[in-house]
Image 1 (cartoon, protein in one colour):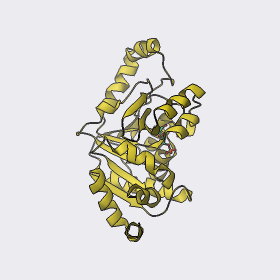
Image 2 (image 1 turned 180 degrees about the horizontal axis):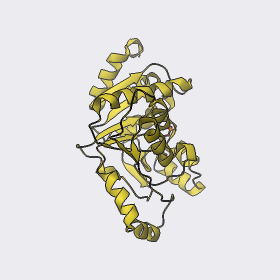
Image 3 (image 1 turned 135 degrees about the horizontal axis):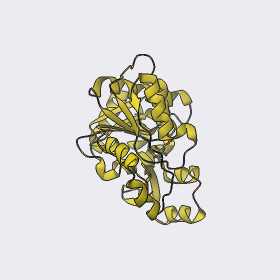
Image 4 (image 1 turned 30 degrees about the vertical axis):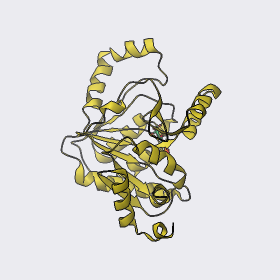
Length: 253
Ligand code: F6P
């Protein structure tokens, strides 16, 4: 309504934090659906937050996607942290190389002088492959780093958009339609109540690992993602949300 349109960014942040019971909300001006620089501003806001809130020697787990890639891009010369370790949150879930968690992880380490470790596991693991890979000592060792991460940075996407981006079958798209899936994060698909309707079988962080001890930063914007962001946040109360005005205004409608 009229009131919402007049709200300044600070008030928007407060209202969203209150309504969705989030620890902190950062809203950057603009709509990333319309302008690409808005995504970079979300990236910049995330780097600014990290500068003030990431403890010494922390392990930071990250997901893929273009928004998290924008965080890496904004980690310029003023965020030098050779004490940090960057790891991908989960195994590959069907992104182009430049938007894969492994790639972004290496880039974040390059930008900041930090260390990184990669997780070399393919998408869509069969149950057998999953069980044998997970018992590999090298995988176990990275997995240990991943689950002990105290900071997690992840994207949120629209369910259908993400399924298509991953080359999903007609059958899977139909499943999403039948269950009214609207959101995707970490390889999980959610309906509008935030209930999980599908989980990709891959190695790494599972939703149940996102406990109170971790600082979980969700970064997603664009008015087209407001339904997805809203749905995802329904069941997750402790998240820090970095978004843009385009998504934020819709989230209060
Ligand atoms: O595929 C990784 C991922 O983080 C998804 O979980 C999420 O839905 C998507 O990327 C977000 O991508 P983008 O920031 O490009 O919209």
